[in-house]
Amino acid sequence: MKGENIDDLEAGETRRYEVGYLLVPTIAAESVAGTVDTLIRDPIAKAGGQIIAGDGPKLILLMYPIRKTIGNKNLRFKEAYFASLRFTVAPNQIVSLDQSWRFSPAMLRFLIIELPALVEEPPRRPKAELVSAIPPVKPVPPTEAMSQVEMDREIDNLLYVSQ
View 1 (tube, rainbow, N blue to C red):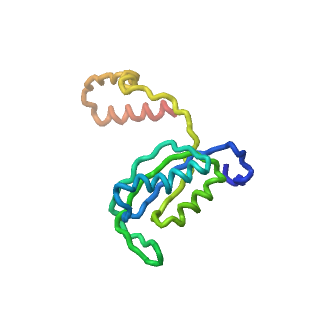
View 2: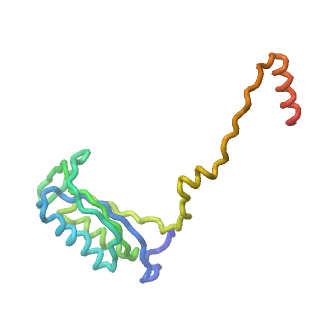
View 3: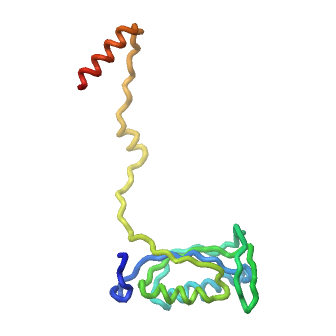
C-alpha cells in the first residue's frame, strides 16, 4: 500500500478513515450539530464517502490554549468541542476534505488517519471453556527432610542424567 500513487487507484476503491476534530467553543450549543453536518458530514457525502460511525461533539477543557486567527484576530481557546467520525471514501478525495476543513474558521484542529483493513478475528472462547481446558494441578505429597549429603547426591544425579 505504501508508495502507491493515489491517482493509480481504481475509482471505485474506498478505504476507511477516521477524523478527530476540535471545533471552536464560540459555536452555540444548539447549533453544534448543524455545524458538524455542514462542516464535516456534507463534504464527506459530496466526496462520495459514507459515514460509518461517529459520536456527538462534547465541550472539553484543553490541556493547553490553542491559537487560531479568525477575521484578522488572534484568538486563544482553552476549551473546544471534541468528536471523531469514521467514514469510507476514495483515497484521492482525502486532499479535498483536508483543504475544506483546514481553512474553516469553525475548525480549531483536526487529524485524518487511515484505519487498517478489517481483519477477521477468530471467535474467542468463553472464560468457562478456558478454565475447564486447564488441567487440574496435582497435589505434591509431602516429603521427608533430606540431609545435605542426600540433597547433593540427588542434584548430581539430575545434572548428570540430563547431559
